[in-house]
Image 1 (spheres, helix red, strand yellow):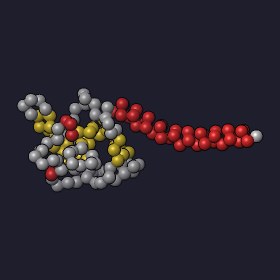
Image 2: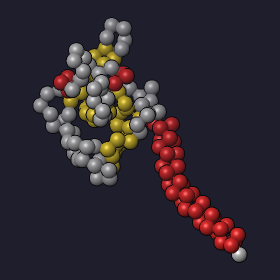
Image 3: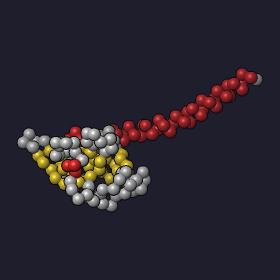
Image 4: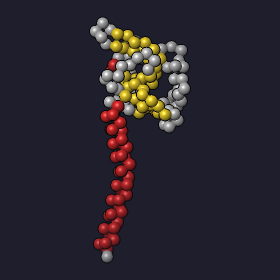
Length: 144
């Protein structure tokens, strides 16, 4: 009788453990699938401050970083610069192609008076390809 009671207790403990583990592994698997689909290390970004017209704190952006998807003036991009922990979501206002064919970007928040050069590291006037996390493909308001 005691053996059956111990086995039931062990089963309940094991069941609770699995019930806790399942949502966590599902979330990680969903994130990894989104990373594969979007070719982006950070496929979802939540807005934490204002800066773009018609967007609010808590809006969720879906971003991608496809190699064949060009970025144009007017596109909204997510970028991360040296010395800042949080990615920034702003609109591209200028493109600059160097003599070797590298395309660099200049960004600006819609509600900001000046471009983002003040946010870039000292001595950097344009965003390079490695600074870009991805291009915004869509968003849902007030979810995050």
